[in-house]
Length: 300
Image (cartoon, rainbow, N blue to C red; front, side, top):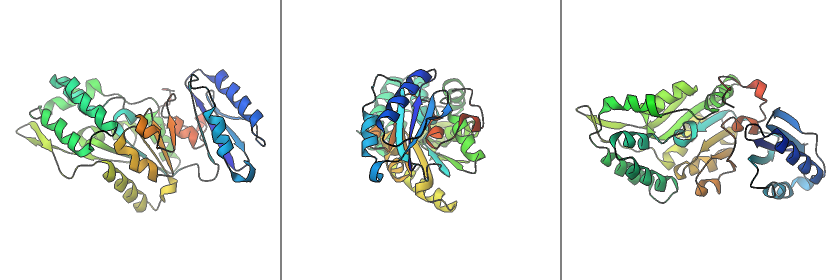
C-alpha cells in the first residue's frame, strides 16, 4: 500500500475514531485494516487508483466538523522525518510570551491586540514586534524570570514530540519570533537541541528595545534551511509546526508543515492542520506508535 490516512482524535475519542475509520475503509477501494497507534489514533494504508489521492482527500473533507478529530493523507514513503522545526509561542508553549510580559506590566490587552493582528497576518511582523517592545520599554529585566516561572507552560505533548524525534535519530530546533530569554529555557525544558529567537536590548536593568536583525517570517525559513543543510538533511525530511502568519514560509517549505491550532490564514495554507489533538499528533503523523514515545508523554 502506497498511501496512509492518519486519524487522530482528542483524548477519550476511541469510539468516534473507530467509526470514522470503518466508514473510510468502506469507501476506499483497496485498504488494509486500521493499525492503532494509540487508543485515539490509527493509520489506514491504502492504494489509490492510479496514485491519485484526491478521492481520499475528498473523503476526509466529508468528516463531520463536529467530531474532535484530525485527519491527514500522505504517501507512506518518507513520512518519518529527520528534523523538527517548531515555533514556540502558542505552539510549544500555551501562551504568547510578550502578552504575558505585558500583562505583568499592566498593558496586557493593548499588546495582545497587536499580537493577534500580527499572527493573523494583518501586520508586518517586524513592525508589530518593534511596536510592542516600545510599549514595554522600561520593563525590568529581573521581572522576566517571574513571568517565565509563573505564566508560561508547555503545551501538552511538547516534550514527547521533541524527545521522541531525538531518540530516533532526529534533530529538534525551536525557532521563535519571541526572545532568547524564553526560548533558551523552553528549549531545555522541552528537550530541543537548539533554539533561535530575538534578543532584548537591555540598559540599566530595563528593556529599551529589540536587537537587529529581527527574526521573523523569512528568518525562520532561513534558519530551517541552514540547520537542515548543516545536518545533511533535505527539506522533504523536515516537519515544521507553528500557528501564526510568520510561520507560513517554513511550514510551506518543509516536507510536512503542520498548522497547530492556528490562525485561519495559516490553517488554510499549511500542508495539514491539527485542531483537536495535542502535539503528539505530529508523531502519529509520522507513524510513531505511542509505545515508542520518549520523554514525559503522560500529558496525552
